[in-house]
Amino acid sequence: MEKQLKIKQLIFDATAMAFILLFCYAATSKLTDFQNFQVQLAQSPMLSAFSKILSFTVPISEFLIAGLLIIKRYRLVALILSYWMMILFTSYIFIILNYSSYVPCSCGGVLEKLGWEEHLAFNIFFIVLATVAIATNTYADSIPSKNFARNRILLLVFLAVAGYLFMSLLFDLSEKKMRFHNNLTRRFPPHMADQLNSMDLKFNSYYFAGHGNGKIYLGNTTAPFTVTVLDSALTQIETFKIDIDRPLRRMNQPLLQVAPPYFYFYEGASPYIYSGSITDWKAKLGSSTGLFFSQLVAVGKNKIAVRYNNPVTAENVIGWVDLSDTLNNSTSKNVLQKQGDGTFDTDGMLLGDIENGRMHYIYYYRNSFITAKEGLDNAIIGKTIDTVANQELQLVSLKTKKAKTFSQVPLVVNRAAASDAGWLFINSEIMGQLDREEMWKVSSIIDIYEIDSGAYLASFYIDNDSKKKIRSFIVAGNNIYAMGETKVVRYKLRRFLGYPRK
Image (spheres, rainbow, N blue to C red):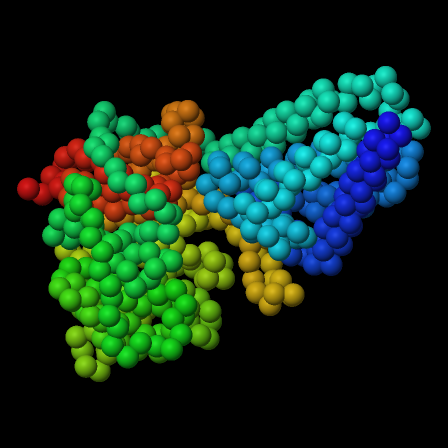
């Protein structure tokens, strides 16, 4: 009996020591790079509204709990507080991974050393450790009293449920704050988009690279030289390998863009663009723009549009490249309308419309888009039905990382987009005054616009995949294909106002 008591006391003391080391290390790491920690909290989809106060209270609480753990008389109370802190941290990570529209950067300390899934397992291990230590505690002089301690298991269950519900409520309040109801009103015609079938790709590393001639082309971030081709009905799948002539020595994460009968293979971190035919998937060096670009889309036969940063002003600029010109003629114009620094405030999505020889650019943080033809003259500026026309983005320069980033997470207005035959399809992140909240939680909203007139037509829902919103989508005639977590889902789009043309 005495031996068992010693073992229990050893487990209790060892667990307390483990938490002391954990909290002291985590708190010190946060305070060592305090500015970065504050910024990361501000970028959280759950904690941005409370980032300033939490940036102080979290490390202070960790130090206080570690101090209480050192004192034998208060060790049980401190361990219960440690357990509840880990419940809150774990609930936060679980909600972010499973319900948030995006996963933010880590929040310093151990979080910065591990991935989110690994840290979830790490937290669960410490929760189990604390549960065992608290349940087997035998110190007679600990606080609370022995009579209260007999109900400690119920207390731990209560704290676990209360912690998760508290974080869930915080997330729900944050979601409503970010995606507020406003005076926009959407139209949802019945059966605007009916789901037909899907294909499970098993992995979440695929992305849409293009479509045409009844085929859907997919790239893969973990296997960048592999092309996956699906038929339009999502019943057949083929794979091909890209063969590059004179490849660069370093290509960290090249991307694929397919515009039948051509394809383009590129990496913006290197100012080189390879091109070839989909008949043999052999790529030759087609252009060296001399500029490091971040986005590329096909806009015509051997014509592409790119977005890059002006090396002098650091502002985002749109460029037009003609690969058929032996002199590699390119046109660049600052058609993007800046409202602040010209970099963060003009961030958005570059789309290509090969049929009409145009490029489209949809801003992330405002209700606006731009469309232009070759030469980038006479650009057309359109407005979406969302009411966010101008956001004052809060930016901060991180001294330790020598970089600039958001000091507070901005409201994303347009999350994803696709274009087809003069029509624009935008996945909006803004909830309308008559939108149903229950549908918002389980699906993504797509708004449809006619580009030339700028007219809004209607909206429809696309179901989430594995409780997460779609990552991207493309439109091909009367079919819309949505990329979920691991599935490609095909919808039949209802004909409207002459779209699609027969």
